[in-house]
Length: 111
Length: 114
Image (tube, rainbow over all chains, first blue to last red):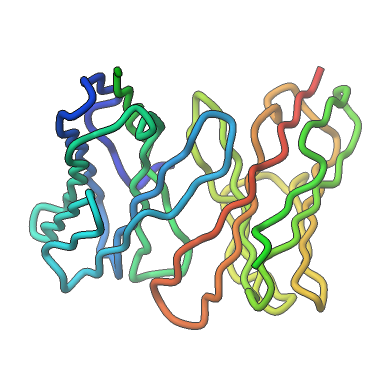
């Protein structure tokens, strides 16, 4: 079963616009991670935010975490066509060491 | 450093057959995890190995098994293949010595069962 639910399932924007994806989860976590997957390829780790952090930045990425609402968001600023991919949130639960993935958001950035 | 290598890249098998998939982790990584990815179920955790021991197992039938060797390379085996086993099988390695080690994925093995 999936720990996280991502919203929206699909997002289509123009180059230069910002893209925001949301993730909700159900249990207590050690950290939440975001990954990107290009079609037919493996996942690539983007950013990790720990449960005691509220916001983190990495280049054009900004991640927020609200543990009281059990939700996170990923913001990609000034998007590029090369950002077209599926984006997944993944949670590392306090009860175990496995990483549980959400269902993903398919982002399309139109040139 | 070389990335995670999975072989073969593509595989076509018939129902009832068995299959073995291979994964070579990044050098120095002792944890290897396996995931099944399908359009309907998304990414489902299969199992995790650390220093040759299975540390975690997902909710899959006993037909799915795995192992890890002393050099951290891992294999997973699926016996008595069913049509529903058609999926992208992803292997990921990490240091996993501390909480919060990110996973490094291979490009997967695309298994088609006919």
